[in-house]
Length: 153
Image (cartoon, rainbow, N blue to C red; front, side, top):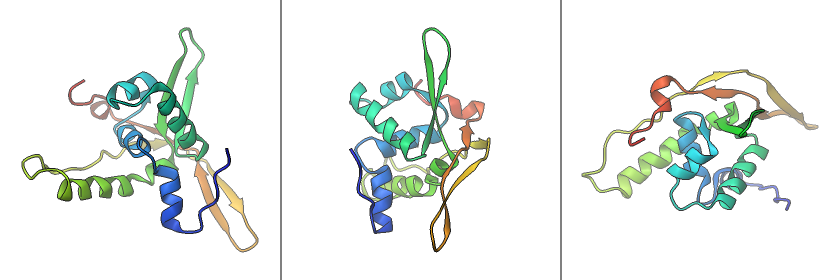
């Protein structure tokens, strides 16, 4: 199914990160590289089919990188690309807004997403008649050892 190209920047952003699970997936990937089963365990209530669909869309949009390891049983890891990392301020702002307006004051604590390290830079460009735009980055993010362990794991 082809998605229509949004004309408004807000609509474009929502087309990329909109939906029930995408922002939550991104939030978890800011904490570090995750396997499918880890994401499914953390995101309580998401079906295997829906998580697969959301991950595929994020991968097609150049937001996440899917690494498949040739082993038995198969191992697949998901990480953010540089384009995905550029969404950190957006997701962080959403979290801050939610804490100010949606979470009770007793639960409101200071919040900040970790800054993952970025490696393997390679930008992909698209050229139009009027300008050149970066449409994707093939950067793979790696988490520090402290970011790999989640509270409650």
